[in-house]
Each structure stands twice: as structure tokens, then as C-alpha cells.
Length: 550
Image 1 (cartoon, one colour):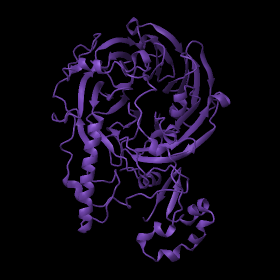
Image 2 (cartoon, helix red, strand yellow):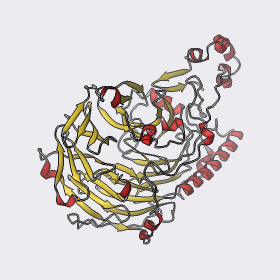
Image 3 (cartoon, one colour):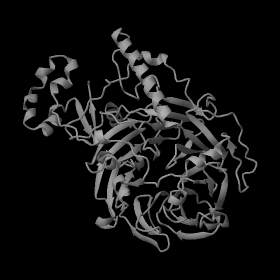
Image 4 (tube, helix red, strand yellow):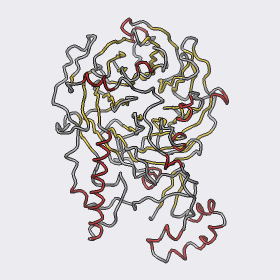
């Protein structure tokens, strides 16, 4: 029996942003990890089968194709509505019957050879078990040059990003106290060759990333948490200091000395954490946002109480867990600098402004049943080099447009925008536009896994001129000085405007004028009365508002 859609999920969809993906990839096998390159249009995807894929995309062409198809879909829907063939015209991305963005299903099996906007650079069988986590090298002197992966085979591998060739690896099993322990998470220092690995038993192992093949353990912090390490985050104050999440606590560790502080028991599983964009840009990273299993995000500050307990919380979705969180990495707008993205187990994406303590934008990653559950739960988030959001679950990956829209809540709490769609998706004549001309360009090649135990994996090169890529990337700026877009028009604060209750229910007829007698008082107190007057048709849950009957 399918999972019943929660009230929060329905409310979020009614407040859905009109921002659409530019690329969607459905994977044949379960997707376990995704990593975006910090300075180039490249992403890595690791699967439950142990396979690792490296893809390059042309974002500008994907954006152009998406906008062109979207205009055609909108024109067809308007024509069908005028002819009475559909009940309404919807601008909802998730309710559209047609995908106007580039879409590929059953990757890599069904990747069209004619597609040039997304290519597979290489693919390989990287681990004997599942590929659990992948990260790019974050150091400025080797930014994005190497990719580190760990698998359920308890091996960490370091490979060149351009070729996929393994240049170092370490077997962690010799450092385990329990032979049944498994690796869960990786983290690399932003300045030193320290590669950290967390395990299911709550240990943190540290290796020299420049000498992995020596199999020498540099540091070990035992029993940081009672359960699996869910996240590791480097701290700006020292290359030896890190934050870890596990079970129901947050810990501050020194990899040389052990645990410095451990938070109070939060009585809720802590799943992921991130710093804020504005503080990352300033290099101080004092505020930490932590996602919880009970659908909230909590705010912590090291300067306040040494991260011993949360200071405040933001309610997101009481029926779902918040499995992933990532900063926007965009300092060009104050609104975006104060925002983080989080993904939940209902398949929804929420941009929250931690300064205002509320959800300001919602996108829908998945609404229909996936291969592995009622919806494709958002368990992975990342930001590409031009601040595009990447969302992923076990079933599929979506690369979202970075174009800004006017339907995002950036004003007062009382100044909310209505969704362009009515309840239900209705019919659409735009189904005549198929997505058959979209997809990935890769050859049908079989993986050669015979040399799994060797120092170098068998990597399938799908690009003959891969060596030329290095020439174009020599002058890559540091991580926090990447390409910036012009947001001058967005920085201006929007004018506050009152909501006319009669206009909100205009489509119901003039009889609604008598059913809302309190609307005359709106001018006196706009904020309070707006919520009270439309309570019967607008329900407010966890920072998300649902409009019923519209």
C-alpha cells in the first residue's frame, strides 16, 4: 500500500517555486552518493553496485533548451485551455505532464548517443560493495583535482578527476576494533592533507591523503558517538578541529587529542549539518545548522555555548526527516547568503532563511512512487560551481536552474504569493512534446572489473581529448572566489503590499464577499488579520502555507 501524502507535502506543493530542473537522470541501480566539482561543470555519482560515473554537462545549453521547451509547453496549454480541453493552465513544475527539461531514464543503459549537453567522461567499478561516499579535494592547491571514495568493502580510494585512474588507496580494516565495522562518511581538510573517515561504530580515522598507499593511520578518535557517524565538517579555526554528527549528539573533536565537547542528548537523530554562506565567505564559520529526523533544522553557535546545545529551531516538515542540508554558496544576494537548502524524506526541497527562521522557497524533487519507496527521498544535496542546486535520492538526480523567479517569499510573513496551480494537476495538451530527444551521450561499453585488486582501476575513457581539459582550467579561482552572477536587480527589497482577501477567492464568485466580513479590518493590522481572516482556506504548518479550495 502506498504512503499517504502528508499535509505538509501537499502544502509545500501548493507553494511550489516555478524554478525547474535543467537536467534529470534516473539511474538503473540505486544512487548512494553525489559530488559536484567546485570549479567545473562536472559531477560524480556513486552507485550501490560500486560503480562510479563522472559526467560533464553544458549548463548554458541545458538552460536554453529547457526555456525553449517550456515556452512551447505553455503555448500548447494556453491553446488547449482556450478550446476547453483542459480545466486550467498550470505553471507547476511537479504537476506538469510533460518534462520540458533534459531527462534520461535507466542511466547508463538508455543514454542516447546523440546527446551532447551531458556526456560521460569515464565510468568504473570502483568498489566491490556499494560506493558509500564521494568527495572532491577541497584544498586550493589541488582544488577538484582528485576524488576520494569509500565503499562497503572498507577501502578508501583516491583517483584523478580527469581520468578516473586510482593514484592511492588504503584498506581500513586493519585499524578496526570490530571486524564488522563499515565506513560511512569522508571529509578532507581544506588546507592540510588530512583525510577523515567515519565508521558505523562511531570512530573517526585520519590518513595522509598524499600517502594513502602506505596504509598508515595518522590519527584515530574512538567512540565519538554511540552509533554511526552521519556527517563530518571541518572547522576554520584549525586543520585539526572538526565537527561530527552521530546518533543524537554533535561533537567537537581534535583529531590529535580526542573529543573536546559533546552536546547534550537532543533526543532526536542528527542527520546532516552545514555552515552558513555568509560566514563561510568571511572565513569564521561560527553558526552551524543541523537537520533532524523529526523534520526540523536547529541553529547552533560555537561562540554562544561551545555547541553544547541548540539555540533555536525551524520547523520544516513534521511528517518527514530532513536528511540533507547544504549552504547556497551564493554571497551575491543577502537573501541567498542567509539561506540553506534542505531535502526531506517526502521528496521535497526547502530553502530556509535562518535569519528569518522560515521556509522561503520550496521545490519538488519527487511526487510519484520511486523504485525504492513511495517517493524518491532527498538524501543528497550539493551546489555546482555556478550555484545550481543538485538534489538526489536513490532513484534519480536533478540539476536545477539557477535563474531567479518572482514567486519566492522574500518579504514579510504576511506577504505570501499564491501558487499558479489549482488543486490537482488536471490534463495537459503539452504531452505532444516528448522528452525523447534528451538524454546522456555515452557508448555501450561493458565494465572490466578483472583488476579490482590492482592499484589502478579499469576506467572506461569516453572522451579522447580529455587531456585538453587541463589547459582550460589552469587559472581556476579559489573555492570562495568563484564565478559570480549579477544579482543587482534582486538585492532591492520588494515593496510590501496588502493582500485583498476578496481577490484571493475571486474565482469562487461574488458570494465570497459576504463570507469574509472581517476583511474590512485588514487595513488596521495587516499581519495578524491576514492569518486569521483566511484561516479556513489557508493552513500554516512548519513555515509552509497551504491554500485550500483555490
